[in-house]
Structure formats: structure tokens, C-alpha cells
Image (cartoon, rainbow, N blue to C red; front, side):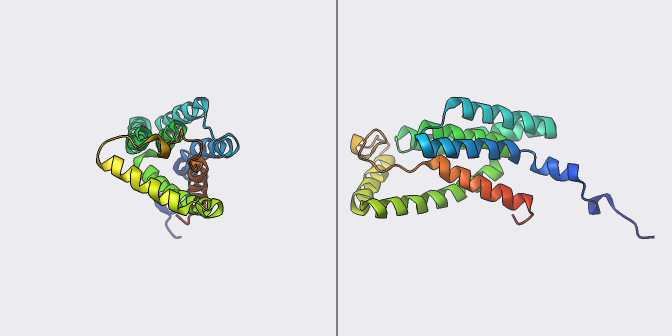
Length: 191
């Protein structure tokens, strides 16, 4: 009779424990993506709920280590994107969404989500800029923002989110896409 080791048996509960933190991340990200697409706004009730759910799920499933990972994910998400909020090149809702996703996924998986988000947002931005025929103006704005960043100063109002003429990309949509792709990939064992 062949011996069966505990590692060779894959129980549904074990799979659920592995995927558990992705559930609030997926729900939060999909809702945020829809709201950001339709209203260009990600409300506080959603990001705070996602943060609380992420910390709660991780704490329940993994104890103190899960709570620690969730809080580190929050700190990483908020810390990495804070300079862009201060430069007014990123909305506060997008920033708080990154913190909520960090609470759900922890710091390591959040980095992956943010990398995919950057790629998706870049493609979205390129499509919008070409569609609106604003390539030269966009390149000038990027130069102004980078110069302000390296001088530790705020860019002029012409390149901020407050300018109604500026081209805006709903980053919540890009984050939602990244979370869905990575979450589904993880669920089917491809990532």
C-alpha cells in the first residue's frame, strides 16, 4: 500500500487558507475599479472596509503573523505612493486603495500587484494620450513633474490633478485589473 504524506494531500480548506486574503482584495479592487471608472472617485467607506477586512482575514487565518503582514502591507502601500499624492499626481482614493490592498495581500504580494498596475496604467495612459492627441503636452508634463520631484518641490498647477485640462487615468481600474489577473492566476495555479 503506498504511503501518503500530508504534503501530497491537497485539501480544499488548505487551498482556501492560501486564497483567503485574495477574497477581500478582489471584492475591494473590483468595487473600486467600477467606481473609479464611472465616477472617477474611490470612496473612503470602500478603502476603510477593505483595510479592516484585510487585517481581519489575515489575523483570523494566520494569527499575529497575519496581522503583522497586513499592517506591513498597509504601511508599504501608503508609504510607496505618498510622494505621488504629495506631488498631486495621484488621487487620495488610489493611495488609500493601495493601503487596503496591502492589508489584504501583505507586502510581498502588494509589490507584485503594484508592478502589474504600473504596466496596465501605462498602457491605459498611452491609449488615452494617443486618442486625445496630447502626446507632446503629456511629455512636457512628465518632464515638469520629474523636475519637481527631484528638486523636492511641488509642480505647477498646470500638471496637477486639479487642472481640468489634464489627462487623468483611473488608477483604480488598473489596480482592479491587476488584482483580478493575479488573483485568478493564483486560484488556477498559474501564478
